Length: 172
Image 1 (cartoon, rainbow, N blue to C red):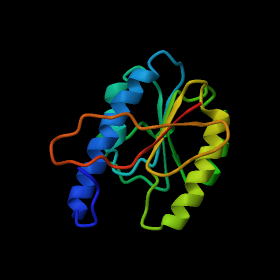
Image 2: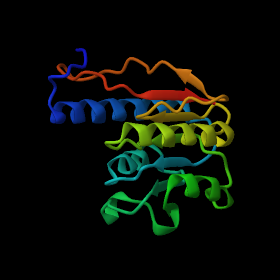
Image 3: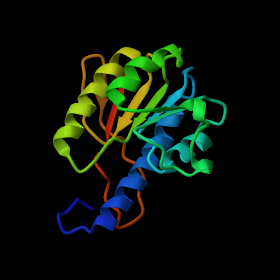
Image 4: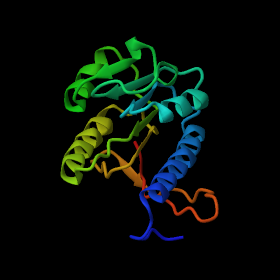
């Protein structure tokens, strides 16, 4: 099914979440042999963090956001949450997060495409320098940067009637 302008917001949300889950599952298999923490850039309500915790039970998972909206059961311990503008928290976090991340999931989309594009470029530049060799960056925005190899999102099994959501996948 192709994306159409007639899809409701609910249909688009379902497509985004189903695609996101399938790609996170796919990426978890690809980084299973790569040491390093997992980063969730854009904690939001903690749904993705909860899924990452299931996929990576033995790894440190760090979350970034402007403020915490996730319920206590869907967020990391306070010492694993870095709050503030990503342009400040990402460059400063490497003193605490010493190992290069094996997987980074960046869900930074807002209603402002222009602001999102600038922030996504910034995230791509930082991750091109910090992601573990062979590590994967997944996101809802274009984060192209020298040092990151864009991958075509793999064909993932989606329920009938759900169209794939456009997602960006990179490997370092």
